[in-house]
Image (cartoon, rainbow, N blue to C red):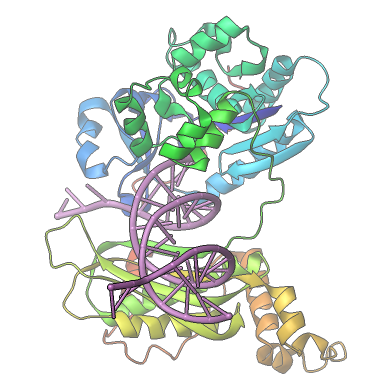
Length: 449
DNA sequence: TCTGGGGTCCTAGGACCC
DNA sequence: TCTGGGGTCCTAGGACCC
């Protein structure tokens, strides 16, 4: 048995904890550069605002409907997420953190009434963090997801489902008739694993509700679509095909990409951005104890604008796997040099690390650095740290973890091809951008009905 | 004027080998 | 006149997720 605990409108809820005046109002949290809506309050959803809706298309609602657009504050959301996850983990013996606002909990061995227990955990999360959440319970992960959808929708739209399923919904505890009517009342597109494409293909075949999907023959689903959708059908029928991943494997790719606030033409500015992306990606790489064998860099113009289009990527192999920001940044800049063409308005760039392997494994196989004896305490620490890339990077990460992200940065003399009098212009401009609103401490409501 | 930033998995098809 | 078959590896692209 599985539970899925999911924070409602998570980013908006985080903002509301610190600004209760936002309660009851239509609020959206906006992506990088305030480009589009990535979280919406219920009131904003009621205005018809979609996920990913471009801000410039909904901005008029500021005046017309009192809509509030907030610049995203991901550090805050990460911190709130940690607190929510640790409280959610009290629901059962194992937890898989699936995203910033969702975690699956395995419920094997949990005694007593699951719904009562889930309601208690929900109240505790609300009381201790201020985040409202929905909890779905089911015999498979896909059914737990579906139960979560029902729990949240029953609360948000009274009448859509029986009121008793609001906030907490246990699909394992329903009569067959009750289950069937819930599945019949739910659009097939709400199923985890059915997106826009497959959803419309299913509807064309008359498969409109979740119930219809459960009635399909799994092996025919496999023939027409894939094993992935076949598993989804099995899971909806109560046959568990997915288990809990409590220790997710290290990432196989690590990316850092951004859209620019305004078009960038200059190679020097691109180089500055790419170099920053490489450093950030390297930090993530070291945080999971891995090395990368290849560095991909891409630059592209905006497909939304009617300007000459250019999009190109380049994969730069490293001489040997590395997690050293300097080597990775150098490779990324070499890649940039290979693909840069003057005269285009670049809208986005990014760095991806690939061919990722475990640092300990590769060190054992390829390197002898780990075998060199440590110097006497206090002797030669500086020079040795500077010679040993892994120590230098570890020191860098430790400083930035302790005192904040940008406390210590790499100096670079590799931007020689920069054509800009001020190669940092772009990043500084990003930092200067004043957010539309900033989070202020108003009041920390510990208990809210 | 203005359209996010991450990830995963699966499949088809080509290259290559024996 | 005739043009194998099977296996593996790699890559690009498509679908999905939040």
